Amino acid sequence: MKANIANKEVPQGREETDLLIPEDFSNVIGYHLRVAQEASFAAFGTLLQNTDLKPGWYTILTILSQHDGLTPSELSKVCGRDRSTLTSTLKKLSIRGLIDREQIQCDQRSYKVRLTEEGQRMQAKLRAIAQEHDRRLDEIVGDDKDALLAVLTKIIAAFSKG
Amino acid sequence: MKANIANKEVPQGREETDLLIPEDFSNVIGYHLRVAQEASFAAFGTLLQNTDLKPGWYTILTILSQHDGLTPSELSKVCGRDRSTLTSTLKKLSIRGLIDREQIQCDQRSYKVRLTEEGQRMQAKLRAIAQEHDRRLDEIVGDDKDALLAVLTKIIAAFSKG
DNA sequence: TATTGTTATACTCTATAACTATA
DNA sequence: TATAGTTATAGAGTATAACAATA
Image 1 (cartoon, rainbow over the protein chains, first blue to last red):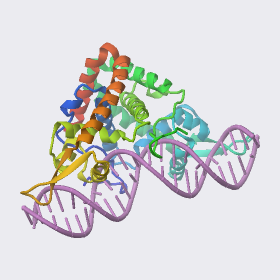
Image 2 (image 1 turned 90 degrees about the horizontal axis):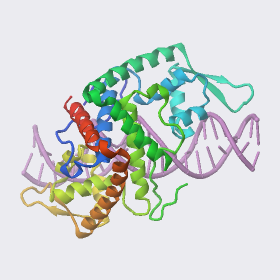
Image 3 (image 1 turned 60 degrees about the vertical axis):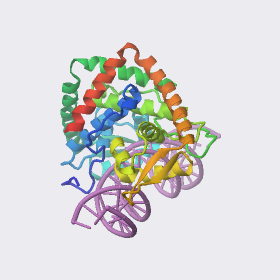
Image 4 (image 1 turned 120 degrees about the vertical axis):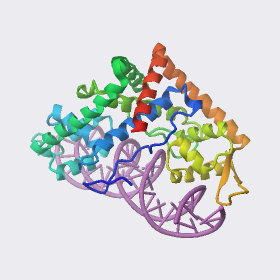
């Protein structure tokens, strides 16, 4: 079992096995995409092991660092997730002192979400870790990076339309 | 809500929103990888909507179609998952008549898993659907397919070693 | 009536640990 | 003791539906 200093949670991911791509999937883009993504995500989680930060926080903190004062609904749209999926994460972030919730005057139903100073520090820390991770990916991918991003963007665009 | 003829389960995935890659992630391979994979997987799930088949079954049925008589433990290694994660799926596949479990003579603890004829038919059906999906991916990716597969394979190899 | 945030609930996929039967 | 399969439990991540407050 992997140790974790900060709390009992441990990044879950693909076990390191030998295998990789069963021959029958050797030509299948979707399968490679899935396995590569899992491997990459698990590696990112490993880099976070000695922190009390969660991989899922990174997206939210980063979006907030660039779009100050979004409401939860707006944030959920940017994330591409349902509103309801953010509630518990926002609560945790608030408890950890990483975000503030500021009541909106003109609409009592909603509020603006902002990074606290601590939140900004944590975002920077996560960004540094993510950059370390992406430096590794860049190294692996090498000169093909631009081409890879272009292809992945095409895939995203094609499927997000229908 | 999406309708589903066969049962109450419905593929869950990314909602179709406008957004896609927040600018702050525009240069981040890992983020693209994740979003592209989710989009692709959700689309595959959509193709299965009118069947009673599950996306997760495809890998198992396909591996079995090429490696007849694996034990659950062997199968889990090929899948790269823990043994325990296969139990319930194998039970469902057995109930649906897609696999047989044949007792091993020399080791009473274990058994060999084999596709039934129905299982072979279903595997073929899933394969056809997967091919339809991958044809779409091929179309999107175009000439870059070989390069994409090569890069993804490099990523997988790099992270699976350590 | 419609929207916002929240809650309740559920489902997928995965993991670890403990149990059982056997080796 | 060690291993194979199973069960129990847990957690992340996501979704839908319904609710209360407000618009």
